[in-house]
Image 1 (cartoon, one colour):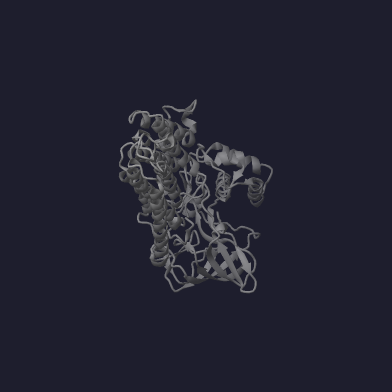
Image 2 (cartoon, one colour):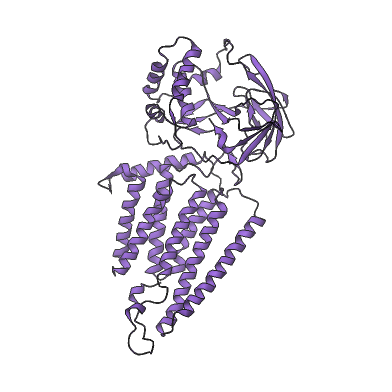
Length: 531
C-alpha cells in the first residue's frame, strides 16, 4: 500500500475543484496501519505457547511497537523510504537492548558487551530448552531472541506494506514466526493463540482490500458509504470463518503433540503437565496449574509426599539422575535404610500427569500394574517400561514402607550411591560451605545439625518470582537473599548438607493434595508439584 499522504486530491462532490482537506485521504486509510500493529501483537501473544507466565510480554512486544510508531510518524513527516526504516531500526534496537540486556548498556545505548552477552544468553537458554517442556520459563536468552525476531518482523512488514506496496508479502514474516512457534510446542494456549492470530491476519488483509477498493471510489468522487459497507460485510465473513475453524478444531483435532519436540525426556500434550526430573536452580518456577494430575485411593488419611524420583547429580546448576532400571512386578528390591514405621497401600490413577515417572509414597516395596514397569533401587523410582509417557487413565497399585525417621540411623555401607550423594561441585562457591558451618556451629548431633539447616531455610521468604539466573553462583546468591521457591530451598539444603559430610539428594514429586474422607481419595493437581 502506498503512502496515503501522497495520494492525489479527490474532486469535490460536484466534480469541480478539489475536495476539502478532510477528504484528502481515501476512506479508512488508517485501517491497514492499525491492523498491522494488531497482527504484530497477536504474533507476540503466540509466544505464550512457548513461555510460561506473562512477565516476558513487554520485553518481547515493546521494541516492535516502537518500530511501528516510528514508521507511522516518519510517513506523516514524509521522510524518505530509505531514511525512515533506518530511524525505526535504531529506535527499536535501543528499546530492545534496554528491555532485554540492560546490564550491557551505557546511557541507554548498547556497548561492546551487548552482542557477546546476547550470544551467551541465547546459547544457554536454548540448551536448557532441550530439557524443558513448553511452555517453559522465559529465560533471558529466550526473551532477547524473541524480542529481536519480532522487531525484525515489524520493521520488514511495516516497510513492505506501507512503502513497498506489497501488503500480502509483508505479513509472511508474521506467519513464519507463528508457524515456527507451533512446531516447537502446542501448549494450553494453542487454540486461543491460533484464533487471535487468524483473526488479526484476516482483519489486516480485509483492511488492505477495503482501502484498495475504496481508493477507486474515492478517486472517482464517490462517497465512502460503499467502502464501509464492504468492510462490514468482510468483517462478518471473517468472524464466521474464524468461528467455523474454531469449532472444527475442537471437533476433529486430537493430536496435540508438538511437531518438533526438543526434549528427549517425554512428549508434551496440551491437556497434560510434565514434571521433569531435571531441576534447575536457575530456572524460574514453571506454571502450576489447577488441572488434576492424578488421584490416589488410600485408607491412610495422613498426608504424605507423592515422590517421583531422587536426583543426585548436580552439574551446571541442574540436578539430574543417571539411574539404571530393571523390569519388576510384585515385590520390589529392599531399599530401606531405616526401620519401617508403617505400610500404606495406594491405588494411583493417572489423569493429567505426563512423563514416565510413577508417583508413589516413599519407599515403594510392592507394585501391581497391567502396564510393564521398571524400578531403580538406589533412588526408589518407578517408571513405565514402554513408551515415553504414562497412558492417560493408567492405574496401578503400590505398597510403600513409610520409614521411621525418628529411629537411630544404622551404619550404611559406603558405595557408589553414597559417594554420588556426597559429591560437592568444584565450582560451588565457598560461601555455601561457610554458611552451612555457621548455621550448624552450635549443634553436636547429626540430626540436630540437619534440623538446624532445615529450620534456618524455613525462615526465608517464599517467592516464585525470585530469579538468580544472572548470578555467578545461584545457590550463593539465594542464600544471601533468602528469597525463593521450593527448588532453590531444596537445592541449597542438599548442597549445604554435602559440605558438612552428609549424603543428600533432591526429591521431586507432589505434596499430598486434597483428601476426600467419603471416598478415601487424594486429589493432586499441578499446583502441588514440589521439590
